[in-house]
Length: 122
Image (cartoon, rainbow, N blue to C red; front, side, top):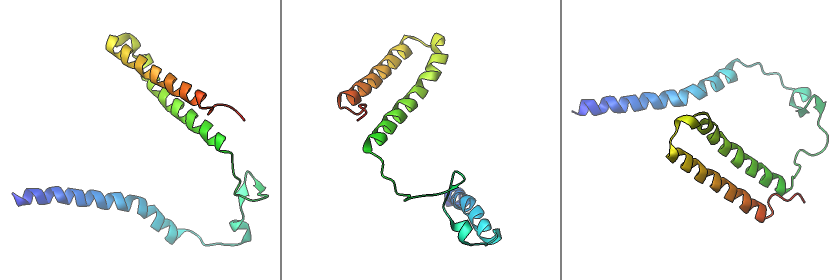
């Protein structure tokens, strides 16, 4: 009986070893095999083919992050609408009601963000 449990734990140990070894192997190989040529040109900051000018730590307004979050929320939520729309004719009334509740919740979130002024460009 204990031999059966040992086999199960052996699978877990092998799985963990593979899970740790798989991402570490390329890192170790790159460290061993990669050429080491350092210099000023290699260590320079490079952006869009031009030498960077100014400070890299530019602070953006919080409004940009709010727009981005609202966009991501609604973009991800619309992904759920596509499979429903494709299978619409084969679904029953329950699926229609569930999706309408989902859409109403999305509209409620949009109205809340709008009422709080999160969508006002200032």
